[in-house]
Length: 379
Image (cartoon, rainbow, N blue to C red):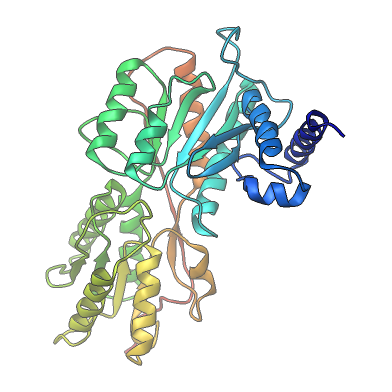
């Protein structure tokens, strides 16, 4: 069989897998080497097949990251030339790297909300990933590519990103930030109401009789984390509780993966927790700014033979999958990512239709999920 027929057959097979959901929108295709091994053909043949799919707008190929599915077969294709001005194209979700479980859960909720909002207008949803500030900048600078009609961006808080977003705004290119916000450069955004979520946690603990509550925060360079801190501090004051001496903020800068901690940061947590427990009035509850910190605190308390929640209650924020499967399931705060995605999609549709240029900013209420890691103070 000729090479031409082979690469066309492989192209059709991949297209069928996309249409049937084997490769869903936003997922990564197998690597070229894996496809070479599967179909027992040359790398050049696989490259030809993928190039055609890229040309159709089905697949995005990014150097160093691989190939990703943009849209289901049969959806409108925005072509580089000859495309009618008003023909709908693709709204792209730009996101940190995929990890098993939690990041994927976040992305699924946002993507599903976007898709359910924009598909009635003929738009489809694609996804691109970044592993660093430089890679995010590279993706943002591709706004003028013909496949892009708007971005929803789960961004890193960095001055270079703020500058590039300002340039996009100046060009009139529509984008919406989710879980991030640049106060000095306001634009369209949809965020969880982090301050309200933190206040809900403090009130939950206070109503259980806790008056000695410690608060541990990840680095607050990210707006969402600074808002949680502000919400917690405000709730402490309204409940008449002392925060002085019970606040720990991990030093350092935000990474692309906000759940990561380096060795020195882990040591900070250990020393801070030990200092709290050995103080004259040790806390009866610890509220952590994210679930990863809360899981770390639970494990350290177990090392110290301190029972959760009988001796110390622990609360996190974000509702990661692991929290529900701990020996003592974690009380936490859950985001409504589906609603965030729907609101972001609706903003993009409004921007494509023109109208009021004033920034649209939405805050989505989170939900307190009460599990086994909190209980009333023991007498």
